[in-house]
Image (cartoon, rainbow, N blue to C red; front, side, top):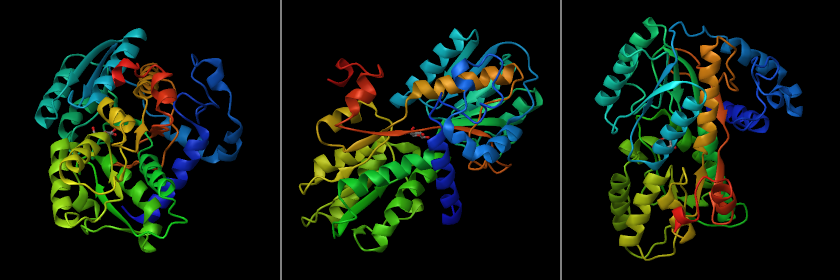
Length: 394
Ligand code: BGC
């Protein structure tokens, strides 16, 4: 992705961030859905400045309402292996059921063919709307033709589904902002504006078939690039480009073995690794395992994303510096709201109509705001909010 475009993405993200978190004020506030709670109809102060994009967002959000009738919603999740998707799935199910929908929730063991056949069954089994967190964003074009011709609206959940005009909406956390927050954490932790360095960094990216992975990577690199250009950050392995740092299927084991190789080739002589930029928690876990097994130097700043329990425990133990908290409850609530709006033929709440082009055009999106978590704020974020109990983190 081109820097210029991402600069615009950052600007867009920042505007979105000042306007909304999930469930906060939104660009739809000017024309609230009939059943929207009163608080949501109040325009936040900042909105005056963004009237133009708001109007644009609304115009683009006037997509055709569902033509399939009934109240069953299909929810396709990628895998039970990663903690977050279990939470996403169960939150979606609970919220949809509470809103009066019947739910067909399926997990596909990270197997594309399984996910395709689950979606086929949802289409043939009478679902009136589909919410899909794809495994491989490029692999659903054919099966979703069936959804389109049956008039079944599709919401891409967390990950954009590419190359199909069957996708009506996208709801996610601001993926580019996830990366910028990871990058900024590193800048602050090492005081890069004042320190001379050079600091040694290694990068562990996400799965190349996940559209989010490039946004996470680019967000972080855009923040860190000036320090790399100034020679304050160097990458001893030389593996910097997205294509060379990816971790297929976000696998912990793959991230671990790659980092073991990097450590033995570049750090076995006692060179310190100062920064392990990891796109998410499953890859961070692999890197942390590699560090535990193969590294005796000063412990690096390690980033992550998702606040998975194993990683929060590592954060408490000093083995991971930060994670990004994406409260799956807020994303689920937002998507349930969007499902309701689609089913009732109401204007669907979106707050971004520029960033996510899936190859057939920009998909109107709702971006929730991610926040960083570390050892200093995890209690407030994760325990006080009821996301985890103290016992979960023992
Ligand atoms: C999600 C991340 C997650 C990763 C691996 C991404 O699409 O946005 O939260 O860590 O997939 O499951």
